[in-house]
Image (cartoon, rainbow, N blue to C red):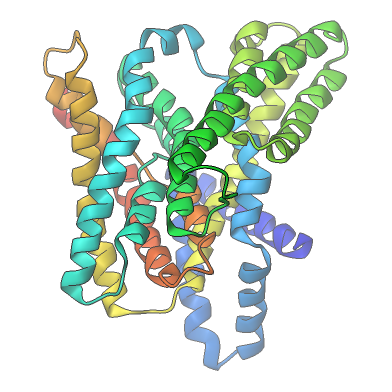
Length: 413
């Protein structure tokens, strides 16, 4: 796995260089497009250079996308993103963010699941309703990594950016809990037989979501105190922040709380308490620089992996058709799941429908959805769910990611 990771890192660095010098596109989109092109070229050369083709196949397979993301780089990316969040602005938008991350995810899960189930039956694909709901659960949360990477390049109103950014940070953890709850219903999740399935799902929510928030707050407090006590030693302060992320995330899985939520809360507390964004003082400056570099490095690796992951799919016309239909379904579900919670609140915007439209189009899907889809490898519906997820993710990152800035300008011109 280390060899595969090293090669993918080198590819990400080379593609980043090419994009910086010539393409001038948003880095995440450029890396993904170049990865897709690389796979196409390598596939074409299969008959000429079979050994090289197999070597590249082994790199993709051995990298273990799911474990690398969920057990590795996700913690770094979430912490790095949360470290620079403006907590004051986030608190101002707390109710929209809370509703989008909870009620919105649930609404979207059932709309996507129901419509996808119907579409699969119409096409002639065997997909049970519960497995369709699993797809709804894994595709409904917006990906904080993809969203925050694209938002860096999009010029949008501050309050709107906070809504999108805040929602994406929190609905990720909620989405994983919903996904795990549906897994229990399908019989693939951990059900210990003690009490009803409903109580198991309730217990799961308390342990994962609430436990993750509390644990993250504890990590943030410990991390802040540790860094504050060594503020005259910037290098040691960086080591402490790395230990909070790596050790904290590892312990989260052992005590069965949400690691993603814990990293978000810890990052927000440390970033706010230390006021990382001010860049004043050697410790703050080094922390800021190191975590920005780590953010860029792991983002590059992730989006190269997403592009290369197309190699894991076997072409199937029916699966592709369902994926294309799912793009429309996911967008419709996203609009409804944002509009309904949004309509419950009072807003200062002159045209709320414009805000909902931006929130809909700016709700990108990414690596987390793919990682959850790959976790269903033993499911009879694994292939169709993975294929459909990949189609939606590629459309989301490339088409929505490239056009969100233009859409904002058009709506607010």
